[in-house]
Image (cartoon, rainbow, N blue to C red; front, side, top):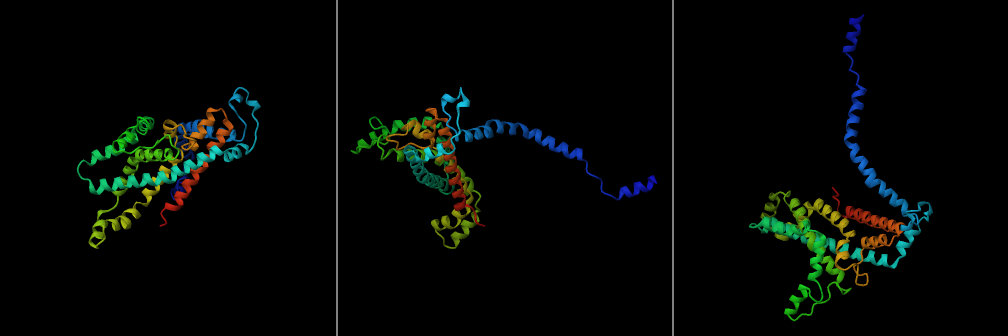
Length: 310
């Protein structure tokens, strides 16, 4: 009887061991647990607290008396969206994104194409030169450009004066201040875009260019028919990353103009920072989540426009 049971058991699949299955799960969670705890404590927790705070009237004086905090619903969001200064900051941010992002992308792509095809000697030197502003402190860059663009002793106006040109107040005139900051941001970030596009260009087979050249396509036709379509995923990444960063632009106006003149360079991030300094924590949280919605909306639009349809 024992032999018969052994024979029958030999023809059946061996049952799985539940202990081994649970052991694998425990090992996996033991590795993931430190990150999960850090995420909950330092990311998810503060985000949820900030979201709750945005529906309250919390101010700096309520820190010692948290029971005095009252839930006021959407009043903070309504106050933010109807504030004239926030509307001005939102308009400045929109201009910064709509002009700055394409400008940075175009400059970075032009530099990448030039280094990938035209420049042979000293290619590494050019790469380092273009990328150096990216790894330099943004505060240091903003301070230097504030000195360069100064009205009285600025080097740019000093050079223009040698040609008999009376340079404008680049940072003191509301007509030029925001455009000056856009130019500085594009100059600083084109090196990062250049590296991204160089990586994308190097994945395009050279045989396609050679075949197109044999068929009589000129340089622009090859760029439009081969380079741009095959760079679509790279362009999507570049637009999303640059757009997210530019919606949150803060350091340039904070250091160079402090949001002036006449709020012409006030950004949504700088506006939110100022409200936090005033102690309006509930109001600040609402402004921060409005900024988050703006970032999410821009990202969705970019994915809709630039995603690969195939």
